Image 1 (spheres, protein in one colour):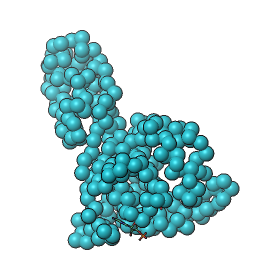
Image 2 (tube, rainbow, N blue to C red; image 1 turned 60 degrees about the vertical axis):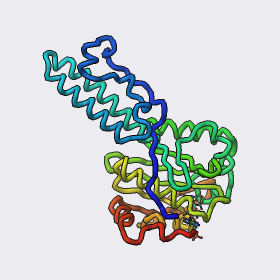
Image 3 (tube, rainbow, N blue to C red; image 1 turned 180 degrees about the horizontal axis):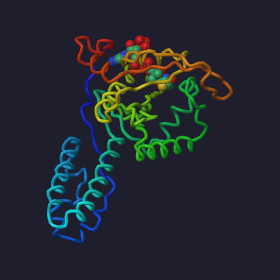
Length: 287
Ligand SMILES: CC(C)(COP(=O)(O)OP(=O)(O)OC[C@H]1O[C@@H](n2cnc3c(N)ncnc32)[C@H](O)[C@@H]1OP(=O)(O)O)[C@@H](O)C(=O)NCCC(=O)NCCS
């Protein structure tokens, strides 16, 4: 089984509604502008992000045509507001993807995942090199889930649970965080339960997440900050095409333990080159 592009990217079923700035009260304006904003839900587009974007663009051009009419200035500004709100909404959806790979589904977390996540992140083995102590109670899991969803709504980070398709088991999570929009940069992080190590799940999830970050989010660079002693994480990053770029001394103190940071980076151009090279990353895989 070779590493594959994410086979499907889904938009959540119930995006928040966007108010139409009075368009609903004005049927003429509504008809001319084509801004039935309340109806623009993912139900119309299913899983097709491209169609959704095209639809938003069509709406925008109709809006511009209408602006050339009599009261262009006034109506145009209304439409621009709606259009801006819609674009914002589409952008927020980009931070809440569901990505499917050969064996996994990567999806936003919800409160029902709290128990499974707690089992993983309360384990000192998993957290040995993490930048926080092991979770102490189920509330830590609940708070993490809430704050990860909030951060996705604010377009600051993407946190996805990793679910094995065949069993439906939640085995861990992967993240793109510290998103620097202007610099088109983000940091990657991942962890799975020890019984799932050594099966290539992070290679598969990480590859899909990078592809999403370089593609949909337009990132130019993804970086990782790990403990230099975390050999399996370093190997997982290198398998994904990361290069070790430097060492920052005594950068962390967790529970009184001071540790260095090994910094890794991968560029969009490296990732694409590897993907298009005759020897793809899947050749590293067993089985
Ligand atoms: C870091 C971590 C995710 C790595 O997990 P992993 O399972 O070793 O990583 P991968 O998914 O890339 O699996 C690769 C291993 O699976 C093997 N493998 C088996 N089947 C495979 C397949 N189908 N595809 C790819 N690799 C496969 C590889 O040979 C490799 O084993 P090796 O390291 O002994 O050579 C895991 O150790 C972990 O969760 N640690 C705790 C949290 C942590 O420290 N996270 C890092 C901070 S960001």
